Each structure stands twice: as structure tokens, then as C-alpha cells.
Length: 136
Length: 384
Image (tube, rainbow over all chains, first blue to last red; front, top):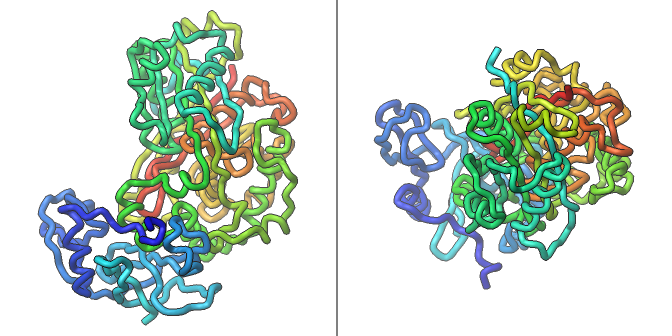
């Protein structure tokens, strides 16, 4: 039943280390060896300086909610049973912005902008855990 | 002051019937709008030597195979890959080609046969599909809900501020026989509509539909032979991936070229008889008004409150109802404003005609990827 399965990322040589680290319960990002800035989403080159040497490093898993929405009408039927839920834009401590979901409960009308969060991992498909964030 | 678009004229425009469903293939919609636009110019397909096409659902066809489909021999082609910014971008790029003699008569057309499912599935780019989709982000509604919430918090904007603009556009749509949503909408209707992705509700979101819009550009030598009002591109610009390092600056870059656009035109925001904005969400209309200098950053809500944005008002915006009330035919959402602007400047807008419209501005916006649209465009049009 295709409609029961959540749409999962297309794994490529570029993004596989990120999603494999998620399965190991670790948040890893690319970091540019030239300018030392962290990069997300995964790239073939550094979007900050154009450098071509990116390394994968573990990060803190801590961040701040930049903005969020309560999704009531998901883009795919596999999410319908869970709706409504909070989708978050999290500014990670290391700099990059990561879209994710709130782990745990918050009121539907909660103002979460500026709240501190920490990463947790959720089994979203048989072979894939994804980073969610819980209020710190 | 940048180089202008002298020697190029907008000589025709066309729009198909907008429909919620259609059996017509997108190729047919492209032909229909192109044919209407050419006929409005007094030209035919045999006159065309340049073609620009934007359509999300055209693949595996493309602009080149469309020349084969329609029997055109072209010297210049453009395929819009900037989503809803493509219509204006295509016009500006076509104008440069015509100025340099690479084409004489160019059709710029956008079309799609869309419904809610295709609207929700439209984006297969990695930014959305791989890094937002698995978290159930709610497609474009979720993306722009997050922008809207942050804007409301930073600038104190209210739901009513957005509602005033949506309601004015609905009043304009009620005068447009081709608009799909023509029922009067009051503030209570807007505020209490079905919630989609907080703080967005149903009437903050476009109605996906089927149709096409087209415009014809021609060299001065061709244009002077035609019996049509002469409309010129007075200035314009486009920018992509701005700012590169921050998704939440309430900007897609209109302010980076607006000064040059207005200087080239020799006009400013106050000289515009109407404004056609890319209204995928009312928040983005606020951002465009601010980026093009109609209001300071965070000030669009006040601007809307202080003006009447209907066709009879002080600041007519989206005079045909826009995508929010006429409908969004996929990529044609980037052309509906062009069609409407040219129709207004030709004084062919019927009941919704802005009296004696001489000057207007059209903005485009699109290619939504990781959390935002990447492409912004705009142009100023004027009737000679």
C-alpha cells in the first residue's frame, strides 16, 4: 500500500552519510575543510565559500526554533493519521537550518519561536530513522 | 540606470478558459493561449520566430519539441525553469533577443493542467522532496505558513491584514468572467475558513486549476505595422537564490534590482496605476510590495489598510483576482499577472478595467525548493 508508506529521501552518494548516521542515532553534518562552516542540506560543494572538500562531522543536536507550523493537511496520505502535528524550522547550534518535526506534545496554538530544542530520532520507515526535535 | 528595452513592444496577450478539470493535454492549452495572443496582435503562427514555454507538466515534451508540435521554425527559444518567475523572466530575456536581432516575434506562454494532487506533488527537487517531504511538511502550504507565522511575530501583522488583500482580490475576481472564485468573501469568511497549516487557512491558498496565459513581443518594425495599442517594457529585473545564506529574511531579492528597474523606467511605485503580484500566498505579496519599494520592510499591512486594492481603489492589486481567486494553472501562475497587466494597458479589461491605466508593474516568484522560492522577477509596463 504505497499510501501507507511515508515518502523517504532518495539516497545518493551525497546524502547517504547523513541518513545512515540518523539510523545510528547520530546527527552528522558536512563541514567545509576550507572555511570550517557547517552545511545542510547535503551538498557537493560548500555553499558558503565554493570549496569542494566537505567532511562529515558529528554535531551537538541542539538548536533553536526559528519558525514552525501546525500541519493539518499533509502533502501525502501516509501522514494523515498523525495530523495535525508541528513542523519545525530549527537553527542548529552549528549554523544550518534544518526542517523537522516536534517530538512530544505541544498545544496546537503554541508559540514555539525561539524555543530551545534537542534532537531525538524517530523510526519513520522500516529502514529509516529521521531526526525529530523535542523541547529542551 | 541600466539599459532599457527600447525597440521592443508587447503586441498581444491571451488567456484560455480557466477550468477546475480538463481533458485537454497541456500542449493543447499552450497552443490555445498562444493562438489567442497572436490573434490579439493581428499576427499568426507563421510570423513567430521565437518561443518561450513554461509548464511543470509538459515533460517529456519541452520547448523544442513544442516547436515541432506547432510547426514553428524558431531562431530563439526559452524554457522557464524559474517556476512562477518564468513569465516575466522570459519576457525580459526575449526582449533582449529582439533588441539584438535574434528574433522578431516571440510568444512567451505558460500552462498547466493542475489539481490539488499535482499541486501537492509538484516538487520533486531535492530541497523539498528529500529534506522536507519525509517530515510531512505539508508542501508549499507548510513552507509559507512558516514564513507567515514568523512575519506576523516580527512585524505585528495580523490575519486581518492578509485578509484585506485577499478580500479585495476576490472583489476584483467578481468582475472577471474567467475567475473561478467569484463568490463574495467577507472578513469572517476569510478568518473562519478551514485551517490548512497554521496560521494559513483555505483562502490564503491558491486554487489549482487548468489553463494557460501567453504574451507576444515584437520588434518595433513589426509592431508599427500592427493595429494594436503599443505597450513597452520600461524596466525590469530578476534574481535567483537571494539571499543565499538566509531563508527567513522576508526577501527573494526584489530590492536588489528594484532601484535599477524604477530608474530605467523613469517611474516609481507611486506612478503605478495597478500592481500585479505573484500571489501564491498573501505573505509573498507583502514581501513583493516591500521589496519593490511600495512599503518599508514590515509595512505592507499598513499600506493595504490605508488603501483600497480593488480596481476602483487607490492601489489596485491583482485586478483580475490573481491566483488566489482566479486560479493557479501551475506554471501559468507566473503569467496571469502579465496577461492581466497587458489586458489592462490595452484597455480591454471590461468591468474590471482600471480607468485610463497607463503604467503597471508585474512581479513573478517561484521555483520553491528548501523552505522558500528561489527566483524573483518583475517588470514595469507602460502604454505609449
